[in-house]
Image 1 (tube, helix red, strand yellow):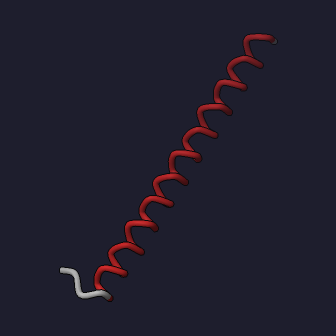
Image 2 (image 1 turned 90 degrees about the vertical axis):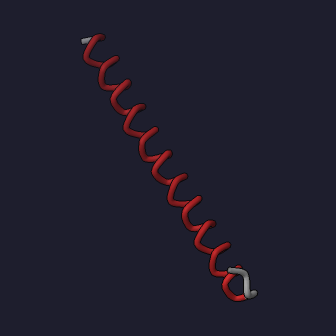
Length: 45
């Protein structure tokens, strides 16, 4: 039973970490898009 609980906790930790990294990547992508749009509005090539 302890082994199953340990495996379950480890799996939840890994899955939560994946969601965090995915969310961070999406945030970085949004920032990049906003910077690009701002550069285009201000005449940067």
